[in-house]
Image: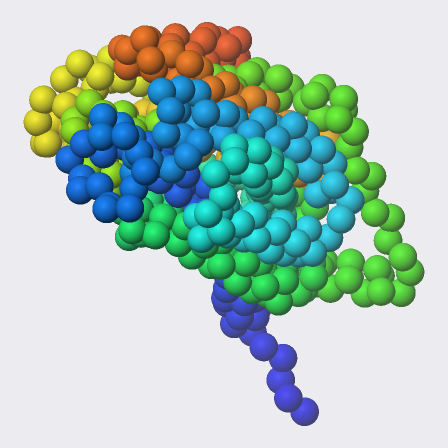
Length: 506
């Protein structure tokens, strides 16, 4: 008769298996959303190619444009003087559709299998991204085609964010969520960097490939998602995460197994066995109004509106700003703009690490937003004075602008989606993520639109608009920052009280 495994060996085997699945899920969802953002970036790189100054280029012999026409090499209908407004309309078609669709997407995400939902979204996103690039090869010069493709792409891309946040939230508890999700959220910046580099390869040649190649990669990733994504730890008999601190529970006995941060394997096996014998009650998906009532959802949602306004204006207009102000080529401007995303990776990790250590999500966001305002001012006035200053300031701006944006859309959304007021109902994750990111996406739509309208009056005015939005985002968190400060004071007073009790026992 084979002897049973020692408890320590069983724990190590269990830990190894659970950790492997968690790591695999984190990596897969990272790659999924990297592809989503990679397919959004090419339009910002190709803008400078759709309208350019052709006076220094040799005109073809059979060209029918007049000799004084300096936009003969531009792509109609973006070859006119109102090209900034037209490009802003193309951006806004995607972003408005994304913002509207996001509020609906989270509701569907709670009620449909995430694997099917994500796979379909990625396949369709790859299709519409490729169709935009095919406009080059099909020689399409009508604005409505590009606007319609962007609207469709914006709608199908809403399948991504609520689904990946819900999936990661299902696998990871609250303990180091900010740090883990800070690293994980670098997929946004990695996707932007990859999208910029891939688009830059063909931007000066057949720019249609700048869209087709990311589109094909996204579609392939959709197939991989369908084959390998695991939605819940229980699906593979892994331990579910602890979403709340033990102190949040009603029970006070730390020896009680119910209070353990990590359920033991016997408990999981009993649950799986009982569920296989008789149907277990599924938690009811939360309503839209119910999600709004969760403390902090409204404040963080409106804060993200202004934070995302700033971030997406940089995302869509930074390459053109560098192209016009610093007079770099289209490819060089695109490559330099990736430094903003490099800073975003660092900022997201820093914000998560600091907020985990201090247990102050709102305070971390507020401080970074306060520092971002003067840094944007300095970048506008001194950032183009030299290549070194431009690199340093772009990275710092990326850290301070994208840090709060990354923290709110990941750790904060997951915290609120598993808030203790929900009493363990994890069905709120996707809806809460959709509400927060959907509200933020309104800002993402407004930013590039306002930049397109304001930039003809001067780039200084665009930066003043961004600084104003940054300050408003900070002000919206004041109540939550005050609550966190009170919580810290209470924690310090309790700590002093317990230390005095130990020093002077009765």
